[in-house]
Image 1 (cartoon, rainbow, N blue to C red):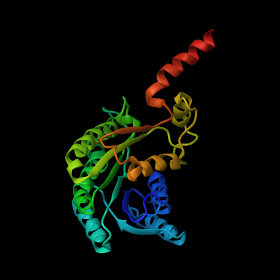
Image 2 (image 1 turned 45 degrees about the horizontal axis):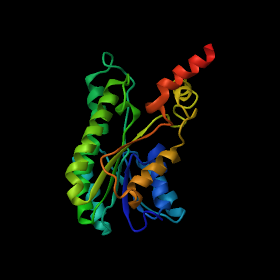
Image 3 (image 1 turned 90 degrees about the vertical axis):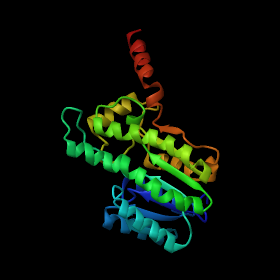
Image 4 (image 1 turned 45 degrees about the vertical axis):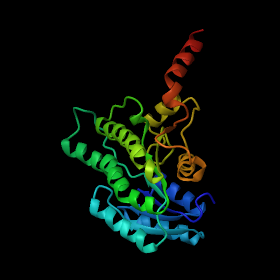
Length: 258
């Protein structure tokens, strides 16, 4: 029960990794605010958590809208339990490069992936301060750690990486920690079995994709007091892809030739 007595916000929680994080946090004792623009699956998740003995409240949240964050903060204040954890998980992608993307796609991706976490941290950090401190976990991507062909997505995640470090500096006096997770290939129905999935898996030193619960476990570690002396760090959850995948491919080629 590493989050016992704490309140946590998870954005983009209606599906995917966000849903896995929300369920895990609830099992660890948190009252989880399940936040998403998708109302039906979000409410279903909150009800499922409650039916399993956890505590969850669904809150419709458009992360790109300041007013929507203000409504969430009002709901949290009404619950009277403070706020201790914020996971900025919501994100979108349009798979176009620099020359093919439209300005609408560029603006849309940055509004969710970069503006969203910025607005969330500004809205939630004062409440976390008043609750005695807390932890912010921003979900990035390997595209924010290395070169990536999807220009707007990469720009949003590199930007979020810099924003997270700035926030870690500024919010330390409030006892609010800010860290970032960078998932690599994660096994989800959307990508499993595709050519991109197989290519990334073949280059991952651990030779498989991460399970969503493996990413959620790292989010739990960063959200909990187990990581109480960590702030401003990047944590790749990628099976070694960013660190050693290129030399792994070279090593494999050399062995095949020998």
